[in-house]
Each structure stands twice: as C-alpha cells, then as structure tokens.
Length: 194
Image 1 (cartoon, rainbow, N blue to C red):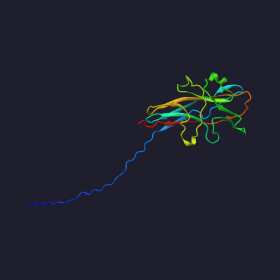
Image 2 (cartoon, rainbow, N blue to C red; image 1 turned 180 degrees about the vertical axis):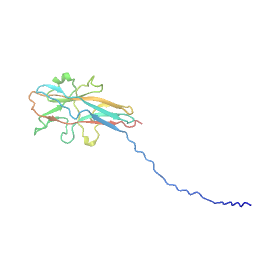
Image 3 (cartoon, helix red, strand yellow; image 1 turned 135 degrees about the vertical axis):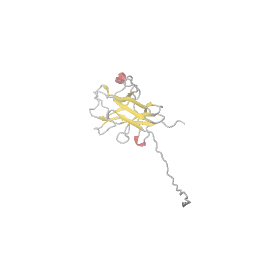
Image 4 (spheres, rainbow, N blue to C red; image 1 turned 45 degrees about the vertical axis):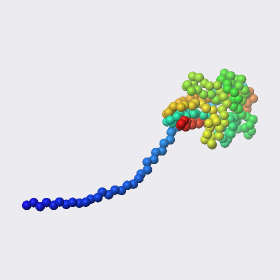
C-alpha cells in the first residue's frame, strides 16, 4: 500500500520597488589648438615685415558649428589694441597702433608708420585677406563676439584649420625695444537655430 502526501503551501510573492534616477550630462566639446605660442617679427627702422605663421585648429562635435574670433589685449596689462614697448615708462608714446584701414602686404609701406595688423588664410595659405586692425576685447567677460570673426561654420562635428599672422611698419625714429600685446582666439559654438 502506498501512502501519498499532498502538501499545499500557499506562498505569496513579496514585491519591493525602488526608483533610480537616470541622468545624462551632455555638452558639446570644442577644442582650439595653436601651432606656436608667439608671433615674432624682426622689424627694422623705416621698414615693414610680417610675422611667423601660426596655425589655428578648431574641432567640435557641436551640432550647429561654431565661430572663431580674434581680439587684442589681455584686459589687464594691455587694455587696448596697441603693441607697446614693454620697457618704456610711458607706453602711450612708444607703441604700434592698429591699422585704421585694410591693406595688402605690398601696401603696408604706405599704411602709416608705427602700425600693425593681422591677416589670415582659410585655404592653407594660398590666399590671405588684407591686413586689418584687430579690435579689443575684455576676455574676463568670456564673450568676445565683438572681436574679428575669422570663420563661421554651420556643419555638425566640424573641424577647420586657418593660418594667422601679423605685420607691422616702423618709423625710422622708432625706439629700439621689445613691443608686446596679446592676441586672444575664441571659438564659440552656435546655438540651436530653432
């Protein structure tokens, strides 16, 4: 004889719920690299010359492109666009001022004594825009969109390289010395156009 046991166990499922937040941080990246730290001109009295060429590389994954700006002055030591004799006690007298009008390199000789300007190329140096005076910007504000616009893109994840240089013309009586200022480059991503 077989004995069968049937055991019925009433098991209730236990449920516990907790919430976990899902959070994404997203921001476009924007990189700006320069091929050199300085612009250098070996300028002779009564003559004009241009500087070494600095390549500016801009890379971004921003969806709507960017604009690259350039402006003169560091906002503290050189609060203007003049290139100033750094050893002179009166920087208002021994300086190079920004070009008042644009000039080709060949016309720098008639551009005016003790002036300087910038030029750039977006096609690897095949052609250059005329030299112009560089506007001033206060970099402390972080908004230098009043600077000179060098290039604007509207493409997503865009990368560009431009070449940039400066030129100056000295009078025959310009005092010897080292003349300095700062050029700031700013890349700003474009906002969503919608």
